[in-house]
Image (cartoon, rainbow, N blue to C red; front, side, top):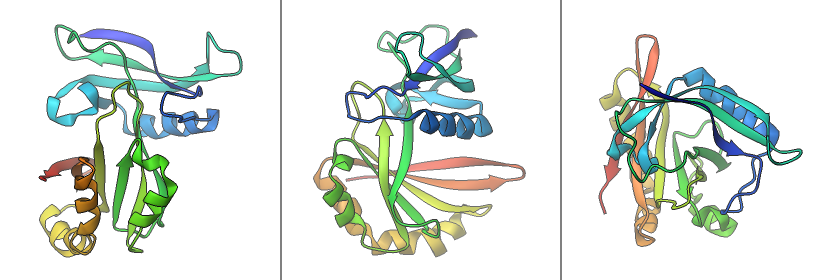
Length: 207
């Protein structure tokens, strides 16, 4: 297994999308990642392309190049024999709630550049049982993918979808249609609890 130790995954510098992570933002990301580590990673932020390996040992360190700036680093473990030719860098994908509260059942995370328009995000917040936020994908070429995440964790996914997720989705399906109009792919993620761990079930809404 190939290893890349101390790989920079993000930093406190402003990126090409105008996003800035503070030192505390990076610390929060590292702490959250370490709780779920090892974390699988995919090519081009697309789970459908299959995982290339995993990342462990997330931490925040002073930048070796930029004074008073910080880097989020991690140890990369590649599970493939040959590195794909278009794998030239590693970048972070995360989510950030903007509107809504912790009691919401469904969260819609909108991709760049659409989340930069505050009025657009506010127009999507039409139900108190949903969250509207940012799907931040720090990549050179950002795929237009919105994440729709169930905030309910259960051992019985079918019942959760039928009784909790589906009614809220149905009531807010106009949001999904609006995203489709902008050629944004919509991926649904449902969390399932099995014994002592959680995992994701992912599906896509076809346009």
